[in-house]
Image 1 (cartoon, rainbow over the protein chains, first blue to last red):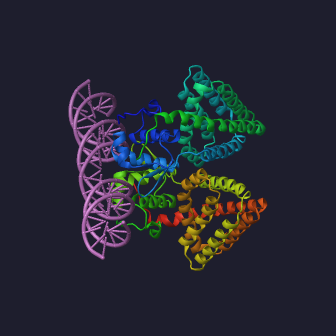
Image 2: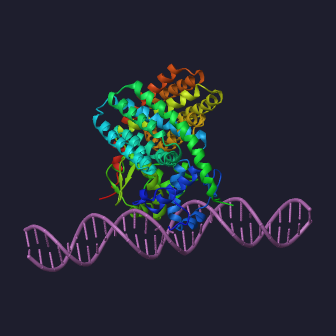
Amino acid sequence: MADSKEWLYPTKWLSKASTGERVACELRMRIISGIIKRGAVLSENKLAADFEVSRSPIREALKTLASENMIRLERMGAVVIGLTEKEIEEIYDVRLLIETFVFERLVKTDTQEVVRELSKILEMMKIAIKYNDADEFSYQDVLFHETIIRSIDHSYIMMIWNNAKPVMEALILLSMRMRFKEKYDDFTRIINNHELYIEAISTKDRNIMIQSLHQNFDDVQGKVEDLWMSQQMLSKGEVREND
Amino acid sequence: MADSKEWLYPTKWLSKASTGERVACELRMRIISGIIKRGAVLSENKLAADFEVSRSPIREALKTLASENMIRLERMGAVVIGLTEKEIEEIYDVRLLIETFVFERLVKTDTQEVVRELSKILEMMKIAIKYNDADEFSYQDVLFHETIIRSIDHSYIMMIWNNAKPVMEALILLSMRMRFKEKYDDFTRIINNHELYIEAISTKDRNIMIQSLHQNFDDVQGKVEDLWMSQQMLSKGEVREND
DNA sequence: TTATAATTACTTGTATACAAGTATACTTGG
DNA sequence: CCAAGTATACTTGTATACAAGTAATTATAA
């Protein structure tokens, strides 16, 4: 699995991962970043050769990516779907759907412990900013939302999250790396928004929650732009996956 | 793949399916029906021997079932999670979540064509009742809801549906088979409810939609009972998967 | 009798081999 | 030059082999 190309996905996060998971994470990043273009056809054999692994883990990865709507498994080859602006909005539809549902559950229970956890994560995020660690910041950001979702103990909401998570993670990673370089002061706003989020959960105030979700939505627009910029930047070192 | 045990899943639906899909469908049915008990540990080798296939399709099936929350892949063996009453309710939470979202989209567009499609499916359902075909009825029932969801062209809502669908399908299959035998007059109510559903979409009337969803929710309670009955019935010919 | 060490049996993850099927390209006949 | 059929080079799906690691059991020593 010694790959000549650079890894977009933080290898640090893959310490316990199987080869199949590694490949899935890396391919996902390449697809979302635009290195692998929408419409490209991926072949199991070709990928196996590229990653210098056998077809088994490749098959596993392709199946994962198909369930995430990143590719479409066809009779001959896997066609890359990737993310258009429409699809990115759709992902955030889902996040909004989930988090609204979760909030309605949360207002009926004791949120003290979750608030404590979230506060901890928020502090970690601040440290990550301080040390210019985009990947760590992304990790904590994803963890923040996962913590909220996990707190209501709803296996099928969790199932939805588990399916959407990898794509969101990749999206956030790319977006944050960009911002750390070019839009550093965005982070003040992001932190403020997360504080608002915690406050909404703590006080169980729907108005604050809506305000927070709205701000987050505004953030999405920014993310879309970022992604586009990110794609522009990355496509310099572009690699054609198929000829 | 010549299996000595009877197949719970309609083999007719598996004509184009790979061995892995077949195994996944059958295992899902066995888990949901309670033949394979919550907490049981499934081994790849054992399953491969039981189904008389190699480990490759078994692995594929287990991965699928894990993503559906039917099993939990652990270091040694796959632990069966199955469905408790809580989880069945959670599945319907998700369906409600999705269908509410879809309805809000539908009221903003032209629903004429969907309504036409749904009417056709409804007629098919009536025929299925007439000929006592529980499996066909279930198929059309699932198709009915899928048609509604598909109509808004939202890839990530579709993704959620695709993940929840197999479990719902199995659930509906078991429930309907039971009802065809013991609660035949339920179907008048179900058909009425589906007509109400179509009306809500046709007139874009939120009140009718809510009424319809509520009736459907009442139906869920019935399904839960059915499932329990079904489990009682099936556990006569029970098979221990692990000792 | 109990605790510890070693062996055994079973687990998963990956590689590889093979069969069946499909699209493309080439050849052959008109 | 064009059409049709055959051959070839791909594709996926399944089986099998092998390596690395884990748990449980047995044997040995205190």
